[in-house]
Length: 322
Image 1 (tube, rainbow, N blue to C red):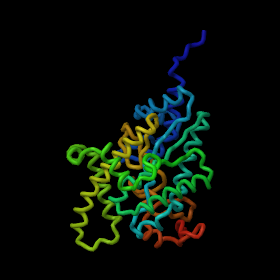
Image 2 (cartoon, rainbow, N blue to C red):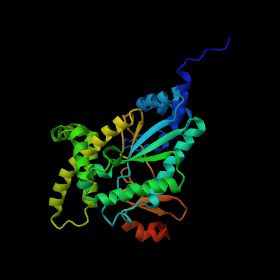
Image 3 (spheres, helix red, strand yellow):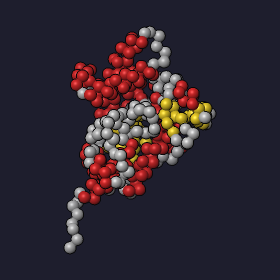
């Protein structure tokens, strides 16, 4: 008589296989990587067990024979520092990143026919006032993301932003509603920064980005750093609020993050493109195509030293290494 299989065995097996496709792209500051093996190998499967929260979430979709739903907060807008980016609209960095995410969903579909869908939760309006980016630039960026998804045929992706929640209300009103309903208090967040290493690292990383993104400061460096430290708390508050809003609107989704996440955290950090550190994103940098055809991200000023500017559709796109 053949051995019986428990009802949960198949979902667990498929869920592990799906998670193994994500592990090579895990973005973390942990010293040991989540997986050093090829997806599907025995040791990679062992690594998947270190992400029980994501396994349970994926298994819920598998048991329902439904597409796995991912949400990825990010793709807010371009950095306002022209030494880092080519302009305020998406360029080759976003094209490559969106294509990667759509391909990842396609790889899931090859081993699990219902496939996967990913919602890009464009969060620029949540804190545009804090990062000093005009709301019209944020609108244009998100609209261009939608246009790129359509032009490139990235059918597994969609974009969600504050306009989908609050419609045509003024942007400051939208931010006020978001903050009032979802944001943690300043006192609670400051206490967390003092006691939690991961939150402290996030606070320091955002402060560094705010300092780097300020291109027109006329005061002292110390005054700028003080102002950016204060704004960093606000950015984290709004980011937390945005995450809770996403959870309300997409309650079953598997939450991805562009920020590094510890192994086993509730959010799964994902690396979009090759970059020199775990914090670099396409919206804080410029894409450079190396002589061997591979891509990396770096500040525009550095990319301009290494390559020549390439335009696409009449706009700066990326650099090709000489």
